Image (cartoon, rainbow, N blue to C red; front, side, top):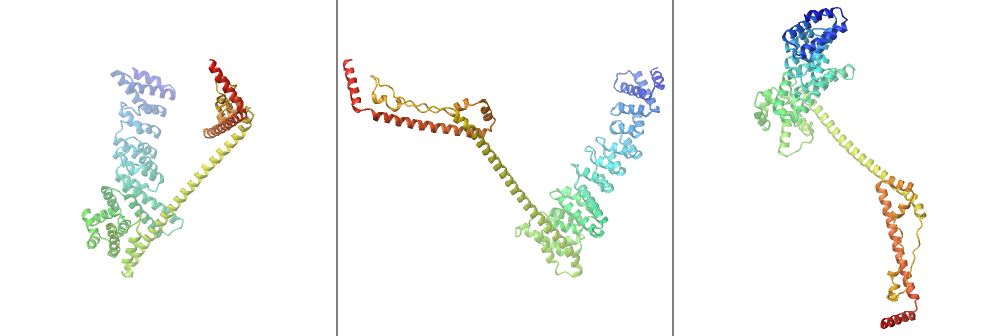
Length: 526
């Protein structure tokens, strides 16, 4: 009964009203407490709405059922094959869809559909692998930027192989925290190829020179990436290089000349088919490397250069010499060039040309390091100079403010009346001695009032000015005022003592004697 009533009601209504009714019915089925019969009828009505000619109705169903695990599977699968605007809603979130459904949707859908699938949370290896094979550059960039997508190393390399020239894909790959070293090297290699193609297309370099520069850039990049890597990572990188045809004698020689012996040992071990520990022992033995060189399939013409470079490295290991820098060692290159001087010209030409390029690269690296150090020192000196100038300017400003405050407060301090020092000689009493009566203790000096009392009498505007001053300037001003008050008080005390002595000198000795006689008589009478 409910199905017939609902379908009859929605048959003659507008598309917007039908969409609202479809959304309400779907939510009632998914989240309402319907009985078994009512739930069956609601499910049947929802599936019947898939035949509605208006996409608004199907979009309303997709929005209601996209994130629900209780949505009918036939409904979700049908909506996943609908228009991209409708299918994208369920393909992005629906937990009902399996890996097979997603792979089929990626294969049959457009690039927009594949981009939606690439952004799904917790994408499996199977779906990510399918996208890596058929997705475009934009889809692969979104897949690489999905931190929850599980992508194997092989599929990552396939992504670089297919669309490594796209800058957005390279950036997304390099931003992944779990990106393997071999994939990073592949990304660097594609970047070098892109730059080489650009300069070649513009006629700045010949194709041969551009290819050689790209190859050397890839070799340098792989050694920089492998610096400090573990044995397992080195083994994977070497295997990737050998599979892709990039593991050659020039790369191994560069590794030795750069002091990257871990990479050289792993590469020679892979090429010769020997254990890495045995290869390490042969490299440290001056007489054992020749056989290893030939077994690894390296050109015989490079044997003197390899032997000379290893000899310089062994001397540095024992402490006889030192090798500076993390890049190519000029000392080892010079030793290798010297060893190649006795070779025939036909064999020596290619080797010396390679070593000459390495020497030029090492010299440029050293020059860059020196220039960088000089620039850093210059920046440090300039920073110190600017800081000193700033402190000096602040000090000058503080001094100027203090002078302005003193100039503003000085007239006010002079305007406050300060009574002159007075000397009072108390009258001699009968019970006191005349000398004691005119002593320093008898002289009353009215001290000069201290600066805080003067400041209390200043107008309110001056007090406001003082309150607004910085603490350092105000403290200096108060200390100056207190010191002035102490000096004035000391001068007043000295004046009082001098006045007292002058008074004592003016009293006649006869008067003092008469006073003492009268005092003695009074005591006897008492």
